[in-house]
Length: 477
Ligand code: FAD
Ligand code: SF4
Ligand code: SF4
Image (cartoon, rainbow, N blue to C red; front, side):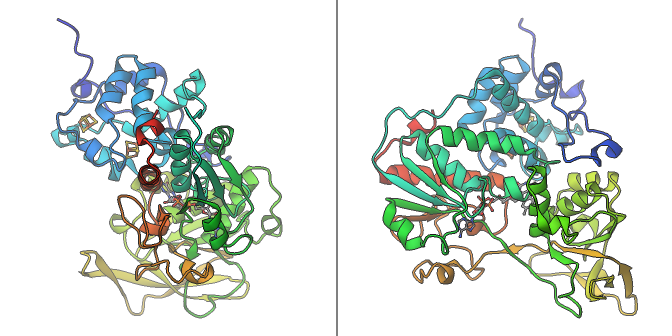
């Protein structure tokens, strides 16, 4: 009888790729996890029980065929595993690194219910595609035939790029417009290198460019070119601009020097990693070195800020969040990583105001969790008489993002938005009410995840291909 290569979860324990020691990783912006060695990847993949109804797959936004690529990895058929993995995911090595797997695929892996830890799906997905790049299995984009239609994509983040990839593979002429000087959106300028090294993103940008996608960078739609001009120039337009309007803080002293926006702080740090000159860093404005840093917020952006401040050599780094650990929106994995690196979390604490200009302290109100609100989350309530001042000479606001008012900025009153300001678009196709205009990613969903932006981009590309009478299956090859 053939040897059973799978179902090893009973005898083999879950193991992640080696994590660098906190004292070493604080010294640089490189990723903190090493790559699996081949034998380790095969061993970890073999823990999968090959469920008939794989909940991991149904909770992956891309419905990745996880059991199949785990089996192929476990049996050493890695090139085939790559073929299956890339068929449903445009950037598997990126998702493998930064998806919050504990809330998606791995959080629904059934072996956990039998008392075993989940399969390390994300780490195996990353291993498969990193190996594919090394081995030359990732092929250039070469459309079988050129098509006459053209699509203009506004925004070079994962949503826009996933659409660009799929459309270009089908032979469509694609131009991507972006404000920044490099493509990648938040993959390039938001998410720090210790979660996602920049060459991983740049090689995808290169692949698209070499495959014939035209990039018009340093080009802000609404300023350098109008939306109307883009619409005129293309047969269809995809809006993939993300959400960048930072939620602000109120209270006395909120406008003091030394209180900065998370996105500005992270962009400056990422630019430095590219070797760019960043005047706001050199002036000290966006540099945490030697400072007492307080980051306000409890999401992924806050986690990225605190860990960046540690790497810049801050004297101390505290994260203030108005709820407790169990109720924070950020990933538990990243919180643990931050704690290991020396970040102090100050739970149930909210800013009431700020002292000094430049800022010298945050006036903190202590909170308790009250009754659940309509969403089921417990609302924070102020504990009277428990205020105190937290010393700070750099305060970073990481309270989340909202959409810009695109209909006004772009003089497009017919571009319908929801009451949250996100663009109203069909969830399965991205189609808006304006003919030939589509929207994907955060600008439709509100601040979300990379994997959802990729899904939207792919779905939207397929809808546009259908509009053009093209075969979406060609794009999948
Ligand atoms: P974006 O990535 O925001 O890209 C939009 C692009 O549009 C940008 O390049 C922008 O320059 C461009 N643009 C905007 N307006 C214009 C204009 N008028 N003209 C031309 N170009 C324009 N998600 C995860 O899954 N895992 C994580 O670990 C994670 N960490 C995060 C950390 C931070 C700090 C932040 C801010 C977000 C994080 N996210 C994470 C969320 C994730 O990055 C987003 O959900 C995702 O990038 C959205 O993709 P998008 O293509 O819709 O938009
Ligand atoms: Fe899991 Fe994200 Fe990969 Fe899907 S894309 S399998 S959710 S890591
Ligand atoms: Fe394998 Fe877990 Fe998915 Fe089941 S849920 S197929 S055990 S990875």
